[in-house]
Image (cartoon, rainbow, N blue to C red; front, top):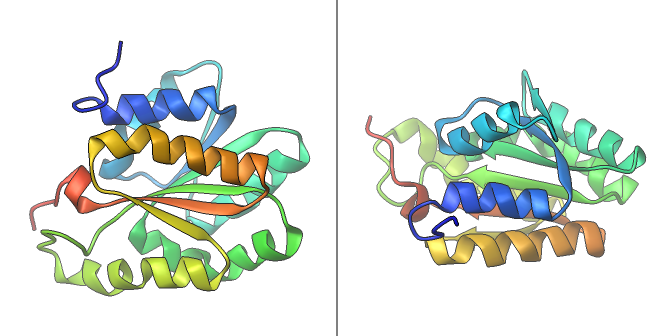
Length: 172
């Protein structure tokens, strides 16, 4: 049994799998280490390392066309790389689900992370993506379930934003 309070990354992974996610796309990121490592080790899912985050939008489109469900794991700085490709999700009207580890917010010590950290929500919402913050471990599973329902039940574009209050700030 996974404790959501202490083992929220494991609880998030299990929730994504229970929600039918079979493809995990990511650019390596310490904030998603558990999700990435578990997806690589899991023979029941496909784990795809990307060279840049926008490739994940195309991967999710392809998964949907093939009848599968996918998630894009990225850091907030990668959202800026996806702006043009997010128009594909808006125009193509396919479900889009991303889990974003936030940088440039609570407790951040790296000045380079602040600009995109502040622009992440605005950028995603400008491209039609619904954004939900997760600040506490107890919010992880219900927010992930709601995001899966919105994306794959209602055909929406949804981002779960894992804030630095949840994941902790990296030292700089």
